[in-house]
Length: 531
Image 1 (tube, rainbow, N blue to C red):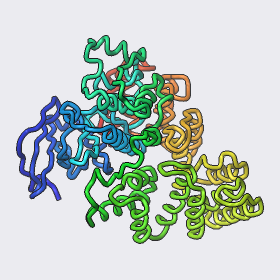
Image 2 (cartoon, helix red, strand yellow):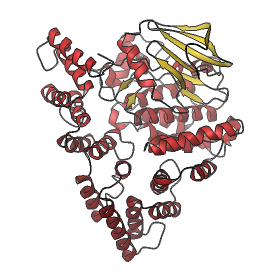
Image 3 (cartoon, helix red, strand yellow):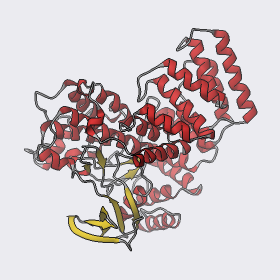
Image 4 (cartoon, rainbow, N blue to C red):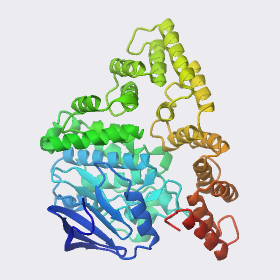
């Protein structure tokens, strides 16, 4: 295990205004050490707070984190920017796979409520097998927070507004710029423009061009990332389907990119899968399944099913069924969806029974049979009555599956009504992120209001943030302050910080440094690192 006692610093490989970066040794292993110049700096504290909970194969791995230092993996292939400059990306297959890896990493970050805010080729590291890792979280924000930063050429139009609007969609825009860098073999977008000229181009949708030999599918991905309006861009997870549609992915044996898996790699993936399913992080586990090319999905699931028992395994079965039903991450297969849902239903998962009822009603994967549909619906009801509640995590991820099935949707709503505020909050998050349902900020607000009525402080903060940014509602500083105050009264430290920022900036209230300081102190005492 890495700690300050067994790290030996080597050559300095980077230096900025906030930190110095060294190649180092931790025992026999090569690592990278980032030492902060001012550990009390707001951005430093925020970076440390964010990265200490990140674990994903397309995010640089962090071994040791403390207030003034980060120890992370040494990624031997250098940065994507270096590879572009050195003409090291030899084929469109490689470029497409790198784009896919970045989108997987972003999808994971966004599922954790984190916006990177500075996606560009120099912040993407490559292994020797051209697998991408996102790094440098110095500008990262949590959803709803203000601040951020980034690099002008990669900034989305909404980030150049006053005030800037930071959402996961700005990361997607930057992904399009990174894909342009790979296509054009250039790390200097808008190189012939002044900064003012760059801003004019970005705000008015005057975009860079790419070479004539760029594959149409690849170019199409760039264009949808560059949509002028954030809500016209796809979520990072939805980008995968567009990327994989490229003919340049068809038939390529992914094993060529990586060596054969050894036992340690298998154990690593297995542990990661188990942890994701245990914590209900469906998106992260699907990333691992889809991207575990050393094992293949089938083999990975064999390992998983042979090693995970109990409720986590039952929940995993249902989620696999839902994935095959919707066609997310894998090709749609109603037969396999039915197999997984039947297995989950035998383990007592009520939403799996509802899914089977729906499949019988519409004849998907089975012959249409209203009697069987009604029978499975009744089974689901009986289980819910017996359990007294519906598993919150399953509701979170399947809240929209039965929207055309009237009775099932009524059942869902009844279940939510006697469920917890947490359930309502998570459904609101699902509508807000657009990861599993079509993004709908108005519906997100509706569910946040339900959660807030049940006393959920995070939901109150989210409503304040939506009024603050004008998401799903008309921008209203007064209502933003009202909801931030409600959230702060319920103990939300980030709401306290935002109230301080509003007093500091004179946003919706008279500018008052004294009150700003008062609220920043409250936020700090409540555990907000930014304060």
